[in-house]
Image 1 (cartoon, rainbow, N blue to C red):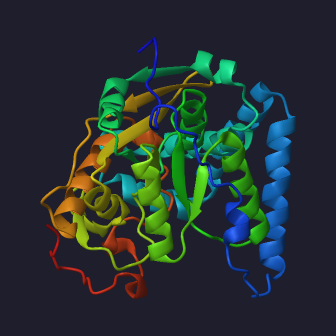
Image 2: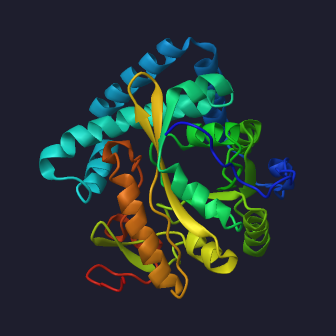
Amino acid sequence: MTGSYRGSGHAGAVVDRNPGAADRIPPDNRPEGLRLRMTAVVWLAAWELARALPEAVVFAVADAAALALHRCAGRTRRRVTRNFRRVVPSDRLAGTVRAAFRSYARYWVEAFRAADISAADIDARVTTEGFERLDGVLERGNGAIVLLSHHGSWDIAARWAETKGYHLAVVAEVVRPRALFRKFVALREAIGLEVVPMQRRATMTGRLIEVAEANHMIGLLTDRDLTGAAPVVRFFGEPTRIPIGATVLSRRSGAAIVPVAMLQRPGRRWHMKVLPPFTVDGSDIREGNQRVARALEDLILTAPEQWHAFQPVWLEDLPEHRRGDWQPGADSAA
């Protein structure tokens, strides 16, 4: 797609980016032990090194590290393989797993460098498809819920979108070490995003509805449930839980859900694809979440090898204490 893009918001309205998210998080007085402190040191050093090295060099180093990890990290490779068995046929399984390691390493370099890439440079490297779908949703005036998975290069997608006048608010899990969390918040705010910390539900949901009412976009990573309380759905044919945020916000705000993929392409280029929007009007939470699960399947299948499925996804693979009320052999999904 070439030409103009609509952008988000109401005509003439000033964008409220609500900066300073890290300062609005209640302090965590738990001590951070040596392991957490060293984790922060290593990640922050890797971050600055990725920014300092020439682009071609840092991407080559990341790719070599990914291939080495794929060979040596047998436990992780087996976990990723188990996930992808549900997604791709057996004759593509080994190649998809190997490519996923490479894609994930590339993602981190892209995330570290996202705030440094110029608007002109990213514009030259990104092609798009289906943006008339997103623009059509925004023409209705009540925002859009951008459905994302841990797939491709979502930080680069956000950076590109902000340069075209599409403003996003994204929900961020509050993690430790806090120094690393604050660094990621600063990165995303530097890109232009609003970061809404995952904390008190009423506060978080209220702010996201305000974003939708301003006709902007809410970006939700929805392929990984952190609560253990979401309804069980079928995902690539097997039971799992996915967050209810997209369903709840769509029902409350009237905003359509728009699946979007930012696909990595050779030569450090990207292709953004907007899939068909949908709503969950008239559906209960379980039915709405099942529709969301089917949309996530379509999104991931645009490039399965770019799905960063490095954690257990399906209930069968989770330890018992994280399964909630689901037991093996149960089929309570919609």
